[in-house]
Length: 275
Image (cartoon, rainbow, N blue to C red; front, side, top):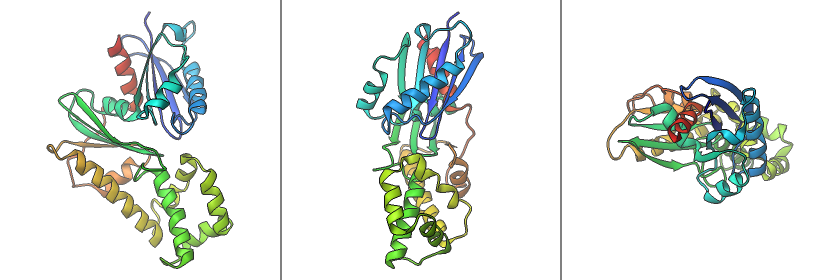
Protein backbone atom coordinates (compact mmCIF):
# COMPACT_ATOMS: atom_id res chain seq x y z
CA UNK A 1 0.00 0.00 0.00
CA UNK A 2 1.41 3.36 -1.04
CA UNK A 3 1.67 5.90 1.76
CA UNK A 4 2.02 9.67 1.77
CA UNK A 5 3.47 11.91 4.46
CA UNK A 6 2.57 15.57 4.81
CA UNK A 7 4.31 18.08 7.07
CA UNK A 8 3.05 21.55 8.00
CA UNK A 9 5.89 23.39 9.76
CA UNK A 10 5.92 26.92 11.16
CA UNK A 11 7.81 29.02 13.64
CA UNK A 12 5.96 27.69 16.68
CA UNK A 13 5.52 24.03 15.83
CA UNK A 14 4.93 21.38 13.18
CA UNK A 15 2.32 18.75 12.41
CA UNK A 16 2.69 15.51 10.49
CA UNK A 17 0.16 13.11 9.00
CA UNK A 18 0.31 9.93 6.95
CA UNK A 19 -2.47 8.97 4.54
CA UNK A 20 -3.15 6.31 1.95
CA UNK A 21 -4.00 6.85 -1.71
CA UNK A 22 -7.65 7.56 -0.86
CA UNK A 23 -6.69 10.31 1.57
CA UNK A 24 -7.57 8.31 4.70
CA UNK A 25 -5.45 9.49 7.65
CA UNK A 26 -3.47 6.60 9.17
CA UNK A 27 -1.32 8.46 11.69
CA UNK A 28 -0.58 11.93 13.08
CA UNK A 29 2.19 13.59 15.05
CA UNK A 30 3.31 16.93 16.42
CA UNK A 31 6.66 18.56 17.04
CA UNK A 32 8.38 21.81 17.93
CA UNK A 33 9.42 24.81 15.80
CA UNK A 34 10.17 24.05 12.15
CA UNK A 35 11.50 27.20 10.49
CA UNK A 36 14.37 25.87 8.39
CA UNK A 37 16.02 29.26 7.97
CA UNK A 38 15.93 30.21 11.66
CA UNK A 39 17.52 26.89 12.73
CA UNK A 40 17.73 24.10 10.17
CA UNK A 41 19.09 21.47 12.60
CA UNK A 42 16.37 22.05 15.20
CA UNK A 43 13.68 22.10 12.50
CA UNK A 44 14.96 18.82 11.09
CA UNK A 45 14.94 17.17 14.51
CA UNK A 46 11.41 18.38 15.30
CA UNK A 47 10.02 17.40 11.89
CA UNK A 48 11.48 13.90 12.00
CA UNK A 49 10.15 13.45 15.54
CA UNK A 50 6.64 14.44 14.41
CA UNK A 51 6.95 12.21 11.33
CA UNK A 52 7.97 9.19 13.43
CA UNK A 53 4.96 9.73 15.69
CA UNK A 54 2.70 9.69 12.62
CA UNK A 55 4.22 6.53 11.15
CA UNK A 56 1.78 3.58 11.06
CA UNK A 57 3.00 0.18 12.21
CA UNK A 58 5.16 -1.47 9.59
CA UNK A 59 5.59 1.68 7.47
CA UNK A 60 9.02 2.96 6.50
CA UNK A 61 10.16 6.44 5.56
CA UNK A 62 12.11 4.93 2.67
CA UNK A 63 8.87 3.94 0.93
CA UNK A 64 7.03 7.25 1.31
CA UNK A 65 6.23 10.17 -0.93
CA UNK A 66 6.62 13.28 1.22
CA UNK A 67 5.63 16.91 0.83
CA UNK A 68 6.61 19.44 3.48
CA UNK A 69 5.35 23.00 3.72
CA UNK A 70 7.89 24.81 5.87
CA UNK A 71 8.52 28.31 7.11
CA UNK A 72 11.83 29.56 5.72
CA UNK A 73 11.67 27.37 2.61
CA UNK A 74 11.64 30.42 0.33
CA UNK A 75 15.41 30.65 0.98
CA UNK A 76 17.00 28.19 -1.45
CA UNK A 77 20.13 27.52 0.60
CA UNK A 78 18.03 26.60 3.61
CA UNK A 79 16.10 23.98 1.62
CA UNK A 80 19.32 22.39 0.34
CA UNK A 81 20.84 22.17 3.83
CA UNK A 82 17.66 20.83 5.35
CA UNK A 83 16.94 18.24 2.63
CA UNK A 84 20.41 16.68 2.45
CA UNK A 85 20.38 13.09 3.64
CA UNK A 86 16.66 12.89 4.38
CA UNK A 87 15.50 9.24 4.49
CA UNK A 88 12.42 9.49 2.25
CA UNK A 89 11.81 7.82 -1.12
CA UNK A 90 10.69 11.16 -2.59
CA UNK A 91 10.77 14.54 -0.86
CA UNK A 92 9.34 17.84 -2.06
CA UNK A 93 9.85 20.90 0.14
CA UNK A 94 7.60 23.90 -0.40
CA UNK A 95 7.02 27.03 1.61
CA UNK A 96 4.27 26.92 4.19
CA UNK A 97 2.46 29.47 2.00
CA UNK A 98 2.19 26.96 -0.85
CA UNK A 99 0.77 24.17 1.30
CA UNK A 100 -1.52 26.61 3.14
CA UNK A 101 -2.84 27.89 -0.20
CA UNK A 102 -3.36 24.40 -1.62
CA UNK A 103 -5.07 23.31 1.58
CA UNK A 104 -7.31 26.37 1.65
CA UNK A 105 -8.04 26.75 -2.07
CA UNK A 106 -7.17 23.47 -3.81
CA UNK A 107 -7.31 24.66 -7.46
CA UNK A 108 -9.58 27.66 -6.83
CA UNK A 109 -8.75 31.36 -7.04
CA UNK A 110 -8.08 33.35 -3.90
CA UNK A 111 -5.61 34.94 -1.52
CA UNK A 112 -4.27 33.27 1.59
CA UNK A 113 -2.94 35.43 4.42
CA UNK A 114 -1.18 33.13 6.88
CA UNK A 115 -0.32 35.10 10.00
CA UNK A 116 1.05 33.39 13.09
CA UNK A 117 4.55 33.52 14.55
CA UNK A 118 5.58 34.73 11.10
CA UNK A 119 3.55 35.93 8.13
CA UNK A 120 3.32 35.05 4.48
CA UNK A 121 0.82 35.81 1.73
CA UNK A 122 -0.06 34.01 -1.49
CA UNK A 123 -2.48 34.44 -4.39
CA UNK A 124 -3.69 31.73 -6.74
CA UNK A 125 -5.28 32.56 -10.09
CA UNK A 126 -6.12 29.94 -12.72
CA UNK A 127 -3.86 27.44 -10.98
CA UNK A 128 -0.84 29.75 -10.81
CA UNK A 129 0.43 30.49 -7.32
CA UNK A 130 2.47 33.51 -6.29
CA UNK A 131 3.90 34.17 -2.82
CA UNK A 132 5.01 37.41 -1.19
CA UNK A 133 6.56 37.98 2.21
CA UNK A 134 7.75 35.23 4.51
CA UNK A 135 11.27 36.68 4.67
CA UNK A 136 11.73 36.18 8.41
CA UNK A 137 11.45 38.46 11.40
CA UNK A 138 14.74 40.31 10.99
CA UNK A 139 13.67 41.91 7.71
CA UNK A 140 10.01 41.00 7.30
CA UNK A 141 7.09 38.96 8.69
CA UNK A 142 4.99 42.10 8.94
CA UNK A 143 1.88 41.84 11.09
CA UNK A 144 2.95 38.53 12.61
CA UNK A 145 3.10 37.63 16.28
CA UNK A 146 6.87 37.95 16.23
CA UNK A 147 6.65 41.34 14.52
CA UNK A 148 4.08 42.62 17.03
CA UNK A 149 6.24 41.48 19.94
CA UNK A 150 9.32 43.14 18.46
CA UNK A 151 7.40 46.40 18.01
CA UNK A 152 6.20 46.27 21.61
CA UNK A 153 9.78 46.12 22.87
CA UNK A 154 10.89 48.87 20.48
CA UNK A 155 8.00 51.10 21.52
CA UNK A 156 8.80 50.52 25.18
CA UNK A 157 12.35 51.77 24.62
CA UNK A 158 11.04 54.74 22.64
CA UNK A 159 8.76 55.54 25.57
CA UNK A 160 11.75 55.37 27.90
CA UNK A 161 13.54 57.84 25.63
CA UNK A 162 10.52 60.15 25.66
CA UNK A 163 9.54 59.86 22.00
CA UNK A 164 6.10 58.41 22.83
CA UNK A 165 4.10 58.33 26.09
CA UNK A 166 4.95 55.65 28.65
CA UNK A 167 1.80 53.56 28.90
CA UNK A 168 0.89 50.99 31.58
CA UNK A 169 1.72 48.12 29.22
CA UNK A 170 5.09 49.60 28.26
CA UNK A 171 5.93 50.21 31.92
CA UNK A 172 4.98 46.62 32.79
CA UNK A 173 7.22 45.27 30.04
CA UNK A 174 10.05 47.50 31.20
CA UNK A 175 9.68 46.31 34.79
CA UNK A 176 9.30 42.62 33.94
CA UNK A 177 12.40 42.58 31.75
CA UNK A 178 14.59 44.47 34.17
CA UNK A 179 14.79 47.76 32.35
CA UNK A 180 16.36 48.71 29.04
CA UNK A 181 19.35 46.40 29.54
CA UNK A 182 17.04 43.44 30.02
CA UNK A 183 15.08 44.26 26.87
CA UNK A 184 18.26 44.55 24.80
CA UNK A 185 19.60 41.27 26.22
CA UNK A 186 16.32 39.50 25.46
CA UNK A 187 16.14 40.87 21.92
CA UNK A 188 19.75 39.88 21.21
CA UNK A 189 19.14 36.19 21.88
CA UNK A 190 15.40 35.78 21.18
CA UNK A 191 13.99 33.62 18.39
CA UNK A 192 10.81 34.63 16.51
CA UNK A 193 8.73 32.38 18.77
CA UNK A 194 10.05 34.29 21.81
CA UNK A 195 8.99 37.64 20.37
CA UNK A 196 5.65 36.12 19.38
CA UNK A 197 5.03 35.13 23.01
CA UNK A 198 4.50 38.85 23.67
CA UNK A 199 1.72 39.18 21.08
CA UNK A 200 -1.10 38.16 23.48
CA UNK A 201 -0.20 41.22 25.56
CA UNK A 202 -1.17 43.35 22.55
CA UNK A 203 -4.18 41.57 21.07
CA UNK A 204 -7.36 42.56 22.89
CA UNK A 205 -5.61 45.18 25.06
CA UNK A 206 -6.97 48.70 25.37
CA UNK A 207 -3.54 50.07 26.23
CA UNK A 208 -2.64 52.93 23.83
CA UNK A 209 0.68 51.31 22.93
CA UNK A 210 -1.01 48.01 22.09
CA UNK A 211 -3.68 49.74 20.02
CA UNK A 212 -1.07 51.68 18.05
CA UNK A 213 0.99 48.54 17.36
CA UNK A 214 -2.04 46.54 16.24
CA UNK A 215 -3.07 49.38 13.90
CA UNK A 216 0.42 49.18 12.38
CA UNK A 217 0.01 45.43 11.93
CA UNK A 218 -3.41 45.90 10.34
CA UNK A 219 -1.97 48.42 7.88
CA UNK A 220 0.84 46.06 6.87
CA UNK A 221 -1.50 43.12 6.36
CA UNK A 222 -3.91 45.28 4.33
CA UNK A 223 -1.02 46.51 2.19
CA UNK A 224 0.02 42.95 1.35
CA UNK A 225 -3.51 41.84 0.48
CA UNK A 226 -4.14 44.94 -1.65
CA UNK A 227 -0.88 44.26 -3.50
CA UNK A 228 -2.13 40.78 -4.41
CA UNK A 229 -5.56 42.11 -5.44
CA UNK A 230 -4.16 44.35 -8.18
CA UNK A 231 -5.03 41.94 -11.00
CA UNK A 232 -8.63 41.64 -9.88
CA UNK A 233 -10.49 41.01 -6.65
CA UNK A 234 -10.56 37.45 -5.35
CA UNK A 235 -11.70 36.09 -1.97
CA UNK A 236 -9.30 36.31 0.97
CA UNK A 237 -8.75 33.53 3.49
CA UNK A 238 -7.04 34.38 6.78
CA UNK A 239 -5.12 31.60 8.50
CA UNK A 240 -2.80 31.23 11.49
CA UNK A 241 -3.02 32.21 15.12
CA UNK A 242 -3.64 35.88 14.31
CA UNK A 243 -5.70 35.29 11.16
CA UNK A 244 -9.07 35.71 12.86
CA UNK A 245 -7.94 38.95 14.52
CA UNK A 246 -7.02 40.56 11.22
CA UNK A 247 -10.05 39.11 9.43
CA UNK A 248 -12.28 40.83 11.97
CA UNK A 249 -10.43 44.13 11.77
CA UNK A 250 -10.42 44.12 7.96
CA UNK A 251 -13.97 42.84 7.44
CA UNK A 252 -15.65 44.54 4.50
CA UNK A 253 -12.47 45.45 2.63
CA UNK A 254 -12.64 42.41 0.32
CA UNK A 255 -14.78 39.29 -0.02
CA UNK A 256 -13.66 36.69 2.49
CA UNK A 257 -13.96 32.90 2.46
CA UNK A 258 -13.39 29.90 4.69
CA UNK A 259 -10.54 27.51 4.02
CA UNK A 260 -11.37 24.15 2.47
CA UNK A 261 -8.63 22.59 4.56
CA UNK A 262 -5.44 23.25 6.50
CA UNK A 263 -1.80 23.55 5.47
CA UNK A 264 -1.35 19.92 6.50
CA UNK A 265 -4.23 18.96 4.22
CA UNK A 266 -2.49 20.88 1.46
CA UNK A 267 0.78 19.00 1.99
CA UNK A 268 -1.02 15.65 1.85
CA UNK A 269 -2.97 16.73 -1.25
CA UNK A 270 0.25 17.68 -3.02
CA UNK A 271 1.93 14.44 -1.95
CA UNK A 272 -0.89 12.43 -3.50
CA UNK A 273 -0.60 14.52 -6.68
CA UNK A 274 3.10 13.58 -6.78
CA UNK A 275 1.96 9.96 -7.05
